[in-house]
Image (cartoon, rainbow, N blue to C red; front, side, top):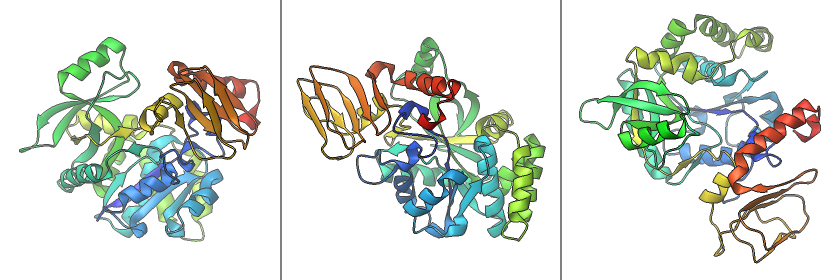
Length: 362
């Protein structure tokens, strides 16, 4: 059985003003149901693991909300990072803690804020990745591209392993320019990198030690004090010294160059819910193409309007007449209105608020 790790960090700035630093997007019900993205992630993992083998790594500000949403998870399975150090430190800490419990464990890492349209096919793809991990490979689940997307990183696939579907990963590719993304899409050799990973913990920690010896030494020191009276003291002293780097850059790119990374392609309706425009594409719309998130009262009144994404989150009535292809987000202290095709630019508003010292809005 798999040990599942869910890194639950970040603030989802492109989903501002709904998503905030204190209540980020993974805690919100953006699934089209009452379940939050985090709850949907845990539910999706149920065929592959158990609550006792499911760990969440999150920040101190979110621990209470995470514990409330995941009441079935053992308290000791919520790992608290004192400050954000990006994904490698979070995943490495979880790997080291799992290794204490089960040195031969298989571990998977799955983000808390992704939507999956077909959970059954997703689980089958992860099982394929588990088979590769049992053979000692560092596995990633690649997403079969549906378009030439410039907003995602890519995996360049090499040779098939055996009869497939597992393939070696020749190289990790950065987010490409439009013409390069088109070439990747047409090549048939490139998959989107969704940062879903499966490996044996001993294999991952050995690779971490090879490429990031300082980070490996840090998490080893923390795990040695785990569940002892010295845990908080050691965590507080060592954690700020760990490099702030993603696991893709820190481990997976170098491991791919060394021939240690393989992938299985997945086609299961994956979406990383990057902005409100994307959310409008994946959630059910009415007959005029409008998407209303949630069932807040008094709700929404739309007339002669199409292609809207409306998020009523303040208790006020949101009304619109004669407008098209807009995002309207109404929260108690901030209102956002922007064209859907400029949804990515919402992050710039958050950056400006930070520069102005308006932290209460961030």
